[in-house]
Length: 155
Image (cartoon, rainbow, N blue to C red; front, side, top):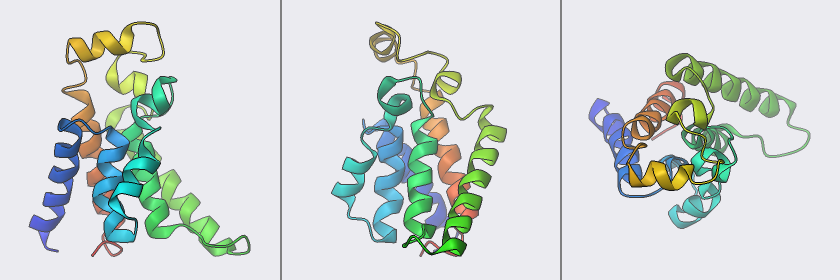
């Protein structure tokens, strides 16, 4: 697709988050089907990753969802595929480096500004809509990086 198609994917991923999907689900459900992953399965696979890996103070779901997209596009398929293993490691490391450069961190707590693993914090964040700004922007950043890095891989 042209620039409009690329921008449309980014906006669709952001809208998925706004519509209530997790950040990881938003990315994998938009990009996965273009890479052969059925949408419902994409939603299931990404479901534990939102909220810093199920509210465990883990990595940002937008980052982990994007890494799953990289795996769909570039992952190795066998234990002896050394070139494939190196390729996906390189792409993953490059993605995480760029993501951290743009967002300041790859960790959910740092990006959101609240540790969802602490009692009552997730409820407070939801009630006060504190994810309304940082999380859609995290999805946008991850999608923009995917577009940059997978330019030749995405139809």
